[in-house]
Length: 187
Image 1 (cartoon, one colour):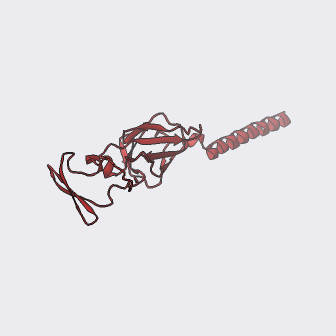
Image 2: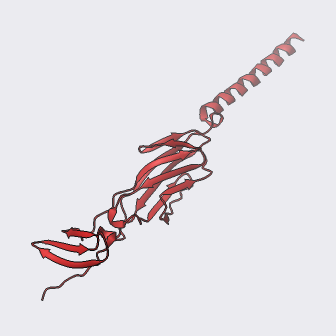
Image 3: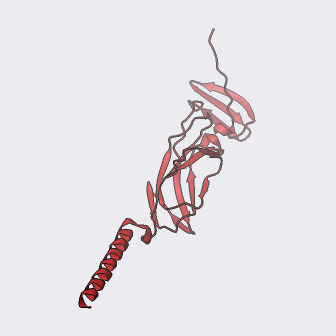
């Protein structure tokens, strides 16, 4: 009275061909004879977890970057293209991805699709975190891979440039005031 579970095993799981001519069990191994050769199955029917996607490159204004955790970009880097890849042979290249960009606006919604490239357009200067994950053939999600993106503001929008401008303006106003006071005393 043993309960058996039947699972489909196809090329998606590593089988050379879906046309199986014969099956033979030797010890704990299951051998499958296909029209493209023999295949030995041993514990391969168990689901293997998919690793988190690797962020392979960034393209910013036709300049390639290969980031490692985070990247610091100049203020005119508003259009960014990110490429990523997750290796999972059982998925036969058909890996669904989910990604999101967390920034100053607080957007936390995931976008889904099979594409391995994402274009982020018209980004304002600020700090962002790009997150991506992949789904395996058992519909389980991988760990999330992250990339920190910092787009620096232009020099005139930095705190030190504004502070220097205000100090210069205050100094100029004081110099004009002193000049007018000395002129009134001389008259």
